[in-house]
Length: 283
Image (cartoon, rainbow, N blue to C red; front, top):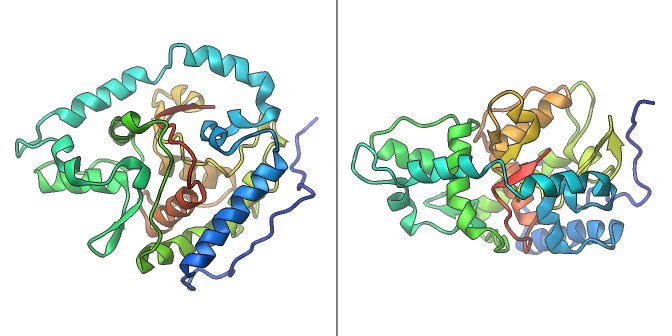
């Protein structure tokens, strides 16, 4: 029998302006975090906030698959990918400086995306900026090479809680864009991110348990079993966004586009206090 989406009875309705042009005040963002997290803590009462770092594996509906996942994690398949990223991270570029040198004065990964010099920066964006300033060509922001480098940067901070500063007006402007995109329907299937990952979190679609939006992004870049079948196993968060767009019949956006950066920012702020788990294993 085909799986169907069934909307949960305790719907979280959009508690904020529908448009993307209104810049929310700090108090509104703080209230968004509380409502968002409280919804999932109420819907899955046995799952503590910190467990959402594990993505879909945190949900009780995933219990049958969890044993196989734990067996894979006994010897994580992404260790070689991360080690390859560390090698490049420490290697000198044309200028003689390394990525590690570039990032020595930047915030830790738990503070990304962050505001600096009039704009919101992502890890992938800062990597390409560093490469460009040191005589190297920028990388595909959705590609495996970028994913390995982001993983090398994030790996030492695994287990530390996310803490993104949203006090700057430009941060909250992008936050509003990401928030709107998360809740807005799109594509041939007329779905929003929230349709699957808020209202149907824990339900099954074609045999797969739908993950909760709380914790999304904590494990990225990730080693994906489905991507490994195509020989390109490591993926960035923006690659996952593009994959979800394609599933909904919507045209994927460019990696590091304003909308995808806004979505990454919105999800990071909703995940305040959840421990970083990147790089992680994902289905």
